[in-house]
Amino acid sequence: MKSLAAFVVTMLGVVGIVGAQSPTPSSQSAQDKPSIVRSIKYVNFGAIDTQDILRAYQENNVKLKVETAYDQQEINRATAVLKDLLGKPNASVNVTVKAKPPNSLELTFTAVTP
Image (tube, rainbow, N blue to C red; front, side, top):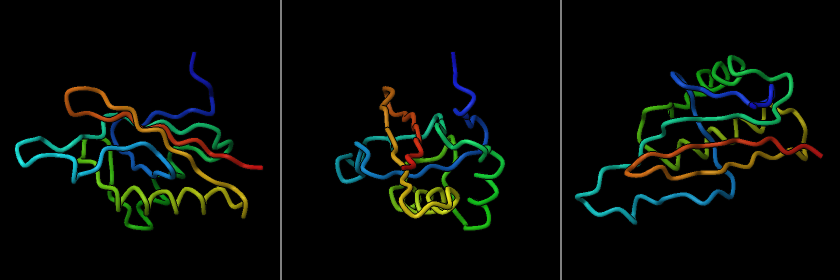
């Protein structure tokens, strides 16, 4: 059963990563296809809903979305936007990156507030 605090973005979504285990572009050979973000989940964001997150991404030109190639720079930008949305100085956002063979990724963002 999914928690009400977890949101899955299936059509439009952007991701952020802090301290995640993630594939790096340098580890891919020229013949490999880039990893594709297939799903994004948001956990423990309380009253902040998916539409608020997507609006903040749009306002800040964060371009990572579901069904796009993994891009660490965009993920870092998105993480900063998510932290800002939480509005608490000691809050953080943790991201879990789960590989789904052959070249897909599943991302879960978890808000951590003291």
